[in-house]
Structures are given as structure tokens and as C-alpha cells.
Length: 360
Image (cartoon, rainbow, N blue to C red; front, side, top):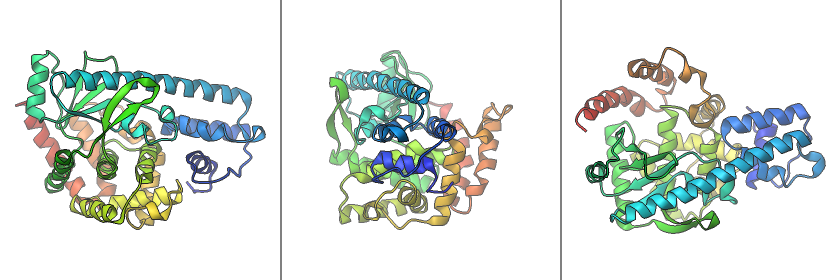
């Protein structure tokens, strides 16, 4: 997919990276952009750009109505998630748990219009450690399916909720150790801040830019190698890097990325951000890698939002845990040269996780 294709041109215009949208599109081309926007969960983001176009450049009226209806639902979903995120924060706070809202509603605050970011669930980091959090939730009668770094939470708010014991993780034990040390340092330094959500929903604690530069990239990296990622996740990182960045912060961030084995992946993301989303060179963390960046771009196009459209990952007959493990390992073989530590450690981690869950 070339950077001068209408989808990418409209995305850059919508993000404010390009001053104009030079295309005059046919109804069929607009339908194709709308379909791709839905696959990539950027319908709201592109709508912001379309509203700024001259009337003669906009999609046909019938499609504009569909687009408007889709965006209206995104706004309603964000209102619900904003309300539920605040309710979760307040619920944990009454039991003296300090919480941070990760991804979703927190990252939305970086957008020009937070209500246009297509939401998913509420991810809340409860920061007193896995054992204390699990014991507390069990006493409340709320313990459910527990994974290594999070669990699903039902019964507190209507929205789908993940309680995180750690923000994210890597499969390589030595890289993961260094990543968790970074998170722990950030937690101890209390670099998080309280921010107000739209619509007078209330306040939540959100990560700092320093935290998000590492965390959001690590989240992207892990999803690429387990489920797949789409354009919206890269747009999130675009907005993370739009925040003020000092040279000492850049140096420290790159140091952490090298220590955690994510520098190669970061360089691939920098390529996509610069050449396809229009991020200025001054805001890149490190020089872009064209070869790995184009390979990542293919994955974005194939996978769609969080890999939901990757046919290889959703074949029938691969529903058992063993079958899915084999499927992911076969899929990830093409990443082995670029990201060997994560690929080679993945099956070892899955075996460890299977045994670990027996004793949780």
C-alpha cells in the first residue's frame, strides 16, 4: 500500500499532518475508504477530516449519513466508557487502591477530539500487586478468569473491563524483567496525572508521556506477535509522540527500548509514522527502518484492528489452546529474523503460563 493512496492521504489530512486533501474520489473509492476505515477502527478520525473538506470533495450524501451514524455510535460508546472508567476508579479508591487507566480513555485525551477515538474496553491498572488485588476481588466475590498480567472483571460496571496487575509484558524473561523495572520506577516516581474526561464524567489517573512512549509501543509489539495490530493502534502512538519530547527524554526512552529488545520494532513503527501518518522527523524516537517498516505495514493492512481481520488467525478448526499455539508459532515464523527473542520465548512462556494458572 503506497503512502499516496487516498486512504493514507485522508488519514494524514484528518490528523492535521497534511494541509489539504488533493483527491477527488468516485463514490466507489469512498465506499472502499469507508470499508477500510471500519476494518482499521479509524472511522471517527477520518470523519473529522471529511467535515473539513469542501462539499464537492465529500462522500456522496448516502454514505455521509452512514458515516455520521457510525460516528454518533462511537461518541455514545465513549460516553459510556468514560462514565464507567470513573466509576471503576472511584470504586477501587474507596478500598484504598491507587489506579491508572491504561490505553483507551486515557489515550483518547491526546486526540484533538477524544470522542472520535473508537473505544474498546476499560483497562485499569490496580497497582498493589497481583496477589493483593486477587485476594481483594475474591473477598468481593468478583474473581474470574485470571491471566498473567490481567483478569476480566464483571459486576462492577456494565462495560467490559480488564484489571491489570502490570501494564503489559514481554515473552522474553530478561526483556520482561527490564520492562517491569521501568514500570516500577515510573510508579514509584508518581509521574501519573489526574485528567478530566469529556462530558463531565469525572477524573481519572493517566500515564505520563514518558511512560506511554514505552508502554504503548510494548503493547503494540506484543499484539503484533500474538493477535495482530491495525492502524488505530499506530495512530494512538502517533498522538503519544506528539507530546513534548526533550532530548534527555528521547535518549532515556531509546535506552529503555534497547534494553527491552524493542528498538528494531520501534524503528519499523517510526517508518510508518513518518511516511504514512506524516509525523515530523523531530518527533521520531530513532531513525526509521524502511525494510521492517514496510513489513509492518503489510501486517497492519492484513490484520485490521487488533488482528480481527487476519484470516490466518481465524481459521476454523483452530479453537483449542494447542491448535492456536501452533497456529501462532507458524504465523510468527516470518518474524523470527527481526525479533528472535520474543518469537523463540513465546512457546516457552505459553507452557509456563499453562502451569502457572494451575496454582493461581
